[in-house]
Each structure stands twice: as C-alpha cells, then as structure tokens.
Length: 362
Image (cartoon, rainbow, N blue to C red; front, side):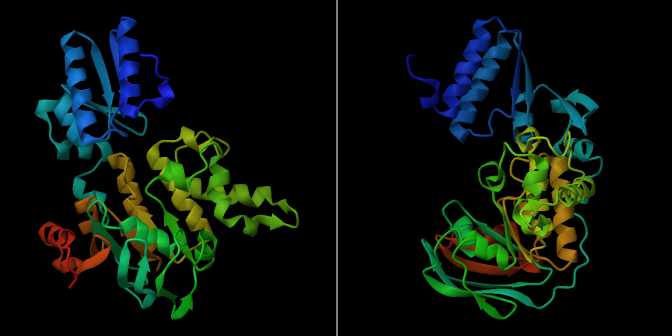
C-alpha cells in the first residue's frame, strides 16, 4: 500500500483507479480501451471486477474497438461514426457483421477494396540474410506487390524488417534494390535507399507525440523544404495540409500535438510521412493494431492505392483475414526461418498455421 504508482504494472494501476472511483461513491464508471495494455489473464481479472461492480448497480460505459470484448462484457452497445451517433441496440440481438456495417457504413466485404495491380519487375531482393535470431532468410519483392509476413510470437518477423530498415546490424547475406547491392547500416541509409517503415508501436517508434501533426508529417523529408539555413514554412504547411485533406486525417489543426489524435489518425500521420518522402518500399508492421474498424478500412484503401501506384509493400500481420485479403503472396516464419512461401491463391488459414508451427526448414 506504500508502493509508488510508478512501480506498479499497468493492470495494478488500473485497479487503483477503479478503487479510487468506487471509494468516491461513483455511480458511473467510464473505461476507455482499458485492455489495450493488458494480457489475457489481466483482462479476465478486469472483466470479473466489472461484473462485480455492475452487480452493485454501478453503471459502466466501456469504450473498445475489440469486438470480442464487446460481446463478452456488454449488455448494450452504442455505435458512433465520425463523431456522430449511429445506433443503439442490445448486444445479444446483434452480430459482429452488423456492428461492422454500422461502424463503417457498409458491409464487411467492402472493408477490403478490390485491387487492379499488374505486378511488375523485382524491386528488392533479400538473399541469405542473417541477423540476431534470423537465419538464412531470402525473398523477392516486386513492384506493386503486397508481400504478407506471418509468424507466431518469437518467429522473428519484426527483427527481419527492422534489419532491412537498418535498426539491427546484418551479420550475413545481402540486399539488392533495383538490381544493385545496397549496404544499410542505419535507418537513415535505408530511407536514402527508398525504404520506409511503419512500426507496430507507432507511439513509441513512429511519432514524436508532443510535436505537431505537421512536424511529424514532414520530419522524414525536411531537406525538401530547406531554403539555406531556414525551412520554407509555407511549402511545408501546404504539403502537410494537402495530405491531411487527402487522407481525411481528423485533427483540430496542423499545429495540434499528434498525441491528441485517435490511433487511426495517428497511423495516417505516420504513413503520410513516408508518402511525402516518396519511398519505393513501404514496410507495415501490424498496420491496423489498436485501430477501430472504420479506420482499418481507410488504411486498407490507402495501402491498395499505394500498390496501384507501383509501390512495393511488406506487411507483417497477425490478423488472418487482413493477411489473406490484402496480400499477393505470403511468407511464413518460425523461429527465425522462412518455413513456407505461398501465392495467395493457395494460401489458407490452415496452410499458413501449418508452416507457422513447422520448425524445420524446407
């Protein structure tokens, strides 16, 4: 009881907040994405406490984008879209598909836009790459292609793409872009080679949260706005405003701190940073993690447009429908090795999971 709050886990801090609210005789408790940083066991414990509080006649407003939680814990669900009320209905009388339709304004199938892409020539070749736990990984990425990467926890997916982006020192193998070998020792060199990286932890690795929307968007391309020792603020502002409008980024203004935006709009800011840089290879690591269904649909549309413009995309995803609906080809990893490569026409959840649990190579 004398421990400092900073020494407690996120779950313990949450319990303290709940106890404080209840001890102050709160009749309504509002929880905003309370499980975003909790593991499965901590989530179960939180749900047990929520049910106990509800039994004590405390009303709870539970905000979440996780469908399975809505159906497990709520009695009634209210749907909002673009800041407006859409519908209110008993949870037991609705379905996941109906909620998605209400959230995005269309059926679930429309979440994944049709693609009209002619896959082009090889753009990037990775040959026998070795780094950390990654052993002898090879693959080719073509112009306009979406290459999906799947693997269970510890498979090495993020380590692989971080190595390509220069975060980790490559200990073996080679990378070619447009037929020419490239030596990438840092993210700066990767960016110069035309490689962009949208990390899974956007708040930690993809954004400077206290800086403005505009500054985050133009950060990777400041040289373009250099005028001697000064920045051409008007040109920088015009470029940022153009993409805020194009991507429909919902923000109070270009000068607003990016941590005031929703997760989906923050992700659009990260992506627009690389669009402004005009990179040829875009790496997306769990691009829709922590994003509501409506924003997911918009991110899918944007990724499809980038592929249609000839950009090459590497997408790590643990979301199987996302992986199967967006990818042209899927490589599967297990314990640092590529254990399978599938054209999307032959890829199924079963075959992907078979390769994801196959420790032997070949």
